[in-house]
Length: 227
Image 1 (cartoon, rainbow, N blue to C red):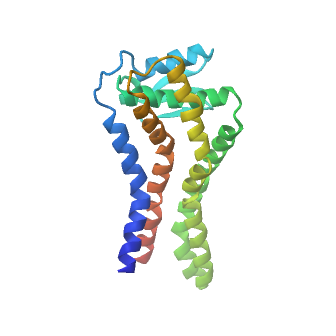
Image 2 (cartoon, rainbow, N blue to C red):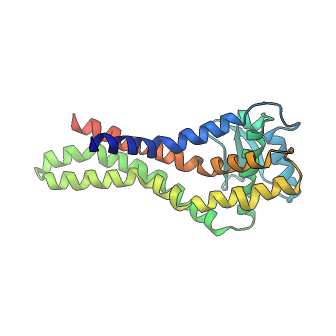
Image 3 (cartoon, one colour):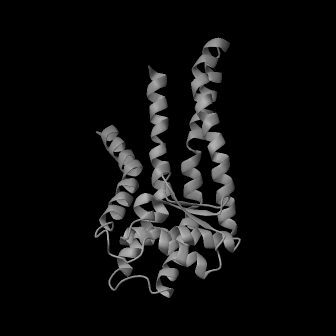
């Protein structure tokens, strides 16, 4: 019984945030034409209002994000061309990151470096996990194989740790940047403020929920190595 409760708790922790985030984004994606302008149009307007004409607004298939290296706000097609509350709120959140970058917001710079480093570490971790069983067999030192395996497991979990550590950067983009922008420029329709706050919370948690889902990679490797 204890094991079942533990499994359920783990599943809730891993899947819960992602399910909640997606439900919120989907809920406010209708009506699809609630606002006269698109997410891309709003992003461009807000950037121009802050003299950030050099920052591009682009459509992407890789998830909504701000790329501080390319100086680009990137939105998925439903946000880029969408006119829903979700589209304009997520666009404002990503512009919030652009403002952080423009202001030299130190936590964003740190997060950018950490995320960039994490990509290489995760690849290294996957490689370590692949060779760890063979290393133990070849050297006939099981402890060495276990140590290598543990190192690989830790590296695969670094993305989740990084995004948890930098979560304040996301909330700053949502509530210290995006929400004031929406209020200052009188973008939100009457009654949408509370819903926009929920959406901005969801936007802030997007990376964390994705990172938690990535922890399933560890379970997948465990299953493979037990065979």
